[in-house]
Length: 552
Ligand SMILES: [Zn+2]
Figure: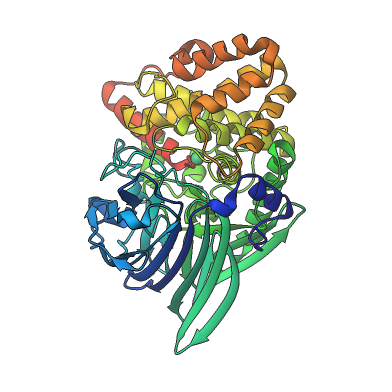
């Protein structure tokens, strides 16, 4: 594994993880961002099917909500044409008996049209379906470019759940680490950024082809955009490459510094970053989602990227905050009418931490490079593995980088999110559930992002923070480029203090399997003395504030 995509420590991890047997994808895509047309060919070289009579692939573009007009044809298995079946986002390819003994190559052609997404489109929408992956803009065209996540048929190992239309909130995917080579052709004037590294660029006839390579990635996220500006920040761990609109040129360096600083914290705390590059890209995302992770790349919603709120600390005036967060001004009028124009009037802890939203979102998404990219997990059935760890990691980074502000920033995004959920009347729930088992995206956020990170604080109080971090380092190296379940994580934490394993397990039980959030964190309360109509309006504002503050 000598690819330029891996860092030096990444090469050692890849060799130890047996990545030479990983799936290998060769992709060639003709992308017209303006119209959203995607026309592509794929060759996937996969592990021997053995007993399997068919192979499954997830084709996100087939989700009915996307209405993308997916077509898959010209399907061959080891060079022989086969008839495959597309049902929703599930592609099923039969494997002839003769092709089951050794590695198998599936070749096919696919095409679809990217749906259009409006940045921040969910801000005024209701909760409940707001984290529908189709509405977030993972696979979308927009003014000035296109975002492609889960954009090609991704092979699902036999143990994966293979329903036609996966349900649930948040991220989608539990894909094995793989090896990628992709040729991405776009009209001249477009820049292409991927989770891999660029190894070649060729221009001909008004088109430009970017050749991207990546090793150990679970998906190859792509961004294509016009009139982009770039800036690189290099440190010992990797080169952080930031891409944003030219109009936000002055944000490139601070975003790069914030990402590089958290990358350095996590490399020192959890183990080396496995890739040579990390791309940070400003993209429009819908549904009030502030950030999204891909292996080797993170997307930051363009409003959040543009700064959200400059600086930290002195944040009293809600009207300014709303302006900075790009929230509708009517919302601050509502609060003013209610006599609530200062943060403390909102009566919820940690809201002053809003000033750190961009940096917290960046740290959260960078942390996903360890929790989800390097150590994989099923983000639909077990979001409890990566999301609380990404939150906890962001808090660790803040404690190191901004000791004075860490308390408020961390409280807003963790405890405060739980308390606000309770103030809005949602009950507590066990954190270890599939995303679709939560009653709403508000409860999912409050419990998984808000309450569950408290486990690591509780473990730190019981065992000492160093023991917890040592346990997480061991968890990372044992599962690098693999996929970990919540039981694996639970066992790794117990292994951090073998003589006190029962105590660790009891804490896991309490924070992750049961519902003691009110006892452990307290339930928030909305300000007293509001009549029911005002209360409803207040709750509406609070929901939107929560949405605008969240990375995923
Ligand atoms: Zn996340």
